[in-house]
Image (cartoon, rainbow, N blue to C red):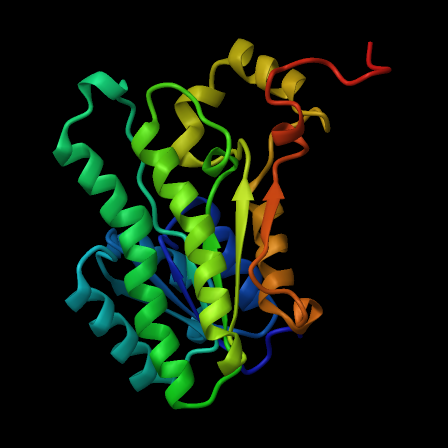
Length: 257
């Protein structure tokens, strides 16, 4: 059991990547707090793990919600060892049509939410002298631009720098901070895109490993970063994308048919 006795918070844990990470952590002995704005979804996810998990309703973009979430976990388990900042939203809008409201909402959830959660949890880790771990879920689009998703991509780029800055500042307290940059993952967020067989095949052909990733692929990376297997790693951005970021222009690798 790689996480036996550990306590983890996974934001956006009701479904998709977050649910996969919560499952992986619970299977390795961790107690997991599944935080999500969708409380019913979080509750359904937590019930799969019995007493080793519980659900919390939280909007990570609201400071009082974050503080209440952290206090609830401390009250129940007495400590927090791992935080996964996974909560995120995505909308499609061309730059010239993007409203300040849409820009702000995506940045508030994806980036400010991770900032608020990290700050609140890190203070508890420091207070209790816990050698903790923070994992941010970014995206390959934190460093690869594309059309119509400027606000999302900027938020994910910000997460990469948030990771590096907080890793630097929290290192003296023995708190490690890393991030994962997923590529195309088969989750509810990408369901509409991937349900089209032609579009799915086109994407698979662009991925050097020739397949779409799963939530479990990201969860295994998160488990590695949360465990002592990565005890000398901090400030890293780990792509989990089947090589897509190496081949984003869609050219076939040399030697392929």
